Length: 237
Image 1 (cartoon, rainbow, N blue to C red):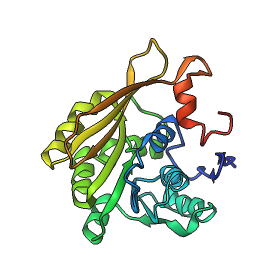
Image 2: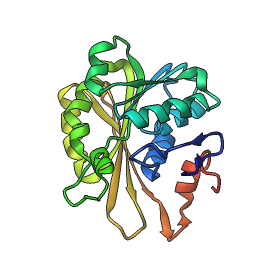
Image 3: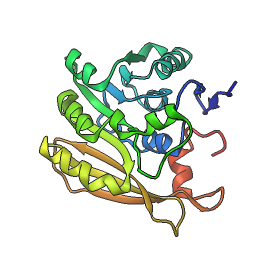
Image 4: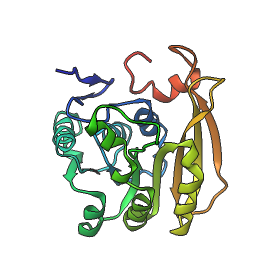
């Protein structure tokens, strides 16, 4: 039995989820701007529910909905929501993204997503995990299409992707009138290449605020920037 992943204000069981909690989700949940004081939030492809739980801790949002297609992950996400301090604000739907778009008339002030991505060189012996990583589970085209249908006029869309995919998703977003407002480029250490891009879009074109984050200076020696970003969540920060 896998032990729950414990954060400062909540715990997450993830033994039923193919995709385990990683740095990506915690970075996105901590970095996403809440300056617009969103009333309604949507977490696309929620897995264990970590992003929705982080936004619940950080915000006063009244409705935080999550969608998850995988049966086991959906069950686990629902259970993590029920066992959290914010159970009354969190809801998980068992649906595909396109089903959800077709059935829901609501708009969301914040849409957040840590999409499953896949690179050709990534194959394991675990078919479920490979499926979770495989981009066909959520192509960027589907994601942007859904965001265009579900994001409120003044809403924000926040996503983390491999750095090499950045220009493609910015281009796709521009086709539906979404502009890049903020970006964060993440490096594992000072000498490594940029690995991840955290991107924030809205319907308002503004000057892009770009920054860089280095996670550690050496193994387990975390940078001040990384500690400051994640200390509300990680027990040891």
